[in-house]
Length: 162
Image (cartoon, rainbow, N blue to C red):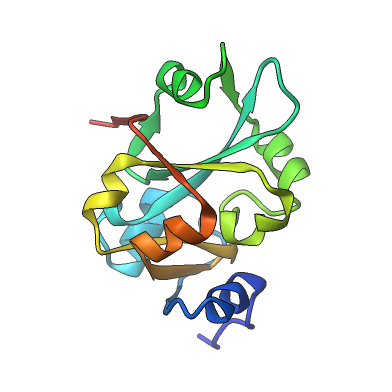
């Protein structure tokens, strides 16, 4: 597989001196758990980026969640100080971010100044893997420098798929 082009997410990490490793897979895959399998990592290390919309506010939120978990909407609303939130549909997520589902990355959306939340499980990991902003390309990044760069708030919002 040919190496992917340098993406703005990679340029951002380089500009901040944050190391990363590029992991590639077949870009037709959109499911985060399948991506974890394709790149040979456990699902709890591969984080998906969900676009969440507060019901009473216009500005979406981004939530980083382990690929083998679901988002608890009630806990997410409470963590964000909102009465109610909903998961954006795939079409809405793509329209809001300008990125394809399966390639949505908070690293590509820093200019939007959206609030970013990360499930607390990330704090126990030295590195996490997240989308580079394009289907077929993931980045393995040191967790704490990444969360600091994204100004991500740690929250307890994941529920197991099991």
